[in-house]
Image (spheres, rainbow, N blue to C red):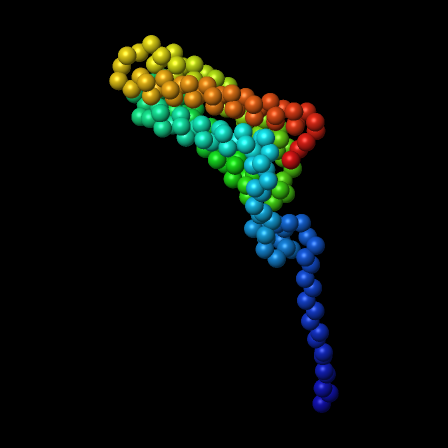
Amino acid sequence: MVETVVNVERTTTTTTNGPPGGPSSDGGFWSAIRLNIDYFRSLPGIIKIVEFVLGIICMALAAPPLNSATSFFMFVIVISFIITILLIAAYFLGIREALNVAVNWIFSELITTAVLTLLYFIGFIVQLARWSESGEKGSGSNTAAGVFGLFNFLAYAAGTYFLFLAHRSGATH
């Protein structure tokens, strides 16, 4: 009887030079997440924080909506607030850098912020037109909400302007 011996050698290779968040990195997507506090020390970061705070003030003053004009104003505030929170989270956690997608983030944010600016412009005008001359219950807080809506419109307009400048300079991240 002939006996055959086979030697099997197993080699394991680990590659850690892959793209962040790729299948070859140790922590996957979450290893690429980094806290980015420095962004909020820049002018666009400060503007986002101002939009966030003014959105809270507008919601507090306009709630509960007593008529259709205030309902539209609250719709604008809530949609803008949610998008602003998502943008703040994306910048704070560095999610834009962690995702390896071919998206022009500056242009996308420019379009989004421009639309929100237009909505805020319409919203604060509707709110002030409805409540500025009214002597009804809640007219004081609703008029103040419209004024803070004007301030938030200006903050979103400033954000749109700085995003336009960044887009014009050729930035994509």
